[in-house]
Image 1 (cartoon, rainbow, N blue to C red):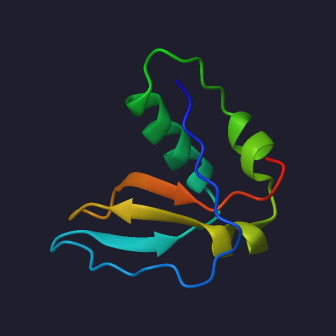
Image 2 (tube, helix red, strand yellow):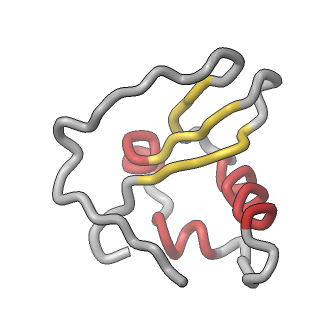
Image 3 (spheres, rainbow, N blue to C red):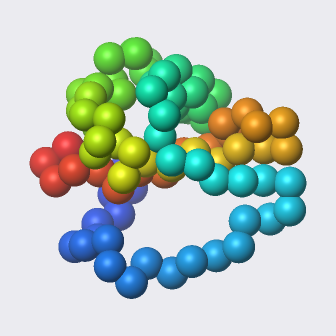
Length: 89
């Protein structure tokens, strides 16, 4: 089953507090490896290849830093991710 959530714009997005011990940060160069690790752990049945990140999100760091965030645990390790994908991706 595939779930696709669509939002026409990034305006008026609700804000929620991050639970104690966790933090959020925006994309940084090299996060492709974190994204891949997170998705491989979350979906062990699909064949997720390293090039999927670039195919899905592109490689423009200016766009990525504005559209992709990571949830960090208390040790600063990326454990979740969310992306506002570009149209057509």
